[in-house]
Length: 106
Image (tube, rainbow, N blue to C red):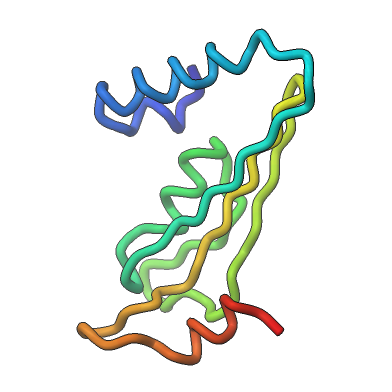
């Protein structure tokens, strides 16, 4: 189990391990895409770094996150995980329309 998983509650760790063990027997290439959503400055980028087990998204306690989504992708033994770190879509209870439009893309 990677160090990133150990930061989750035990029940979450168990479900993730169960999921990975279930797909481990498949010979086919398999991928999963996840979006990390939430308000700004709540730890989304830190969560992505924890899941990957290395600092792949810049995190600063003194600077707000960027407005562009960041995709991190890792492949191991035919399994690819794509994680999108989405900028905060809510600010003080209101939708950040600029972040929403950048997330939707062209």
